[in-house]
Length: 437
Image (tube, rainbow, N blue to C red; front, side):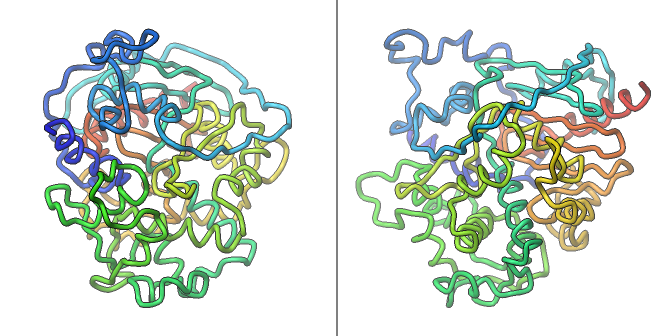
């Protein structure tokens, strides 16, 4: 019982896919990355593994630090998933010009000196890849992650869903100024009854949805259970799918006044994308992007009990395919000899969203940023923008430096506010170094 209660406390932080971005930046003391290496600890080794080294979903051991340093790279072994096919075309090889960046110095947001190599350990990095001018200049893996293994992307998923929605907007199939109920009439009488598609895409919907893990009545409990992200328990009587949960959401406050990072909006957008396209998110992603970009591996989504993908945090990809996506977007949607994502979609994302709405949300590590179509836009001197997922998942695109960094990690704190102080300065340091070459 004690382990399950602990799981309930921390599961909401993580599986609500980014809900505590604005949390404190002070990091409690945890065993370091070396001490928590899943290979060193012997997680899931042997046939069968030892009982005290076995990770499972039904007893919540898959989501306890340091056990999740194994499970984030092996999710498909524990939960139901839906495949994203890479197609039958040739793999687009990644040109390489590798070099040692480990000694590149920088100063973190607290004024402390650090090197690139030290930051990887500090971030509990599972895998990281840097591309510059279309060539891989750095690639490393830690723990149990390997080049061919998908890793859980958490809220980086939102940026994929936002991009698919923006592509449908560009095609004229989805009207951002229309009410959500034009596409999903089932949401009449809910929080989304008078919300627009654009407000959902930019997370400015006023919806009653608490993500306070200390509150046992918070809506996030039913969200997690409904999506099969949380063991429901034998006496659970709540919604059993995402759809059943979403139609119960009520309005709170006004729309289009403040940025509110609430994962349910990503699930609403995913629903609209399915409804408009007539395809699952997995099939649409395969058809429009994955099969066209020369992906090396299939990706997959974590799904609920009826096979509905988590649009808020369920995507799993190999690191090299994640960088292909980042490089494609850096190149304004053109990759593998074709225009895969319309250039207008990328241009709109890069311009960013309403900075005043974002400022009201209070993100101390992201001053001056905004949010557009489920991408985080820095508005810094390099015009950098990001896809971000809890525990340190990133696609970081720096147009001025012609650089893309992708990272998978298993940081012990969900909120990226805990790792931003030494992540974002490290990325800028690498960009500055590469621009001098």
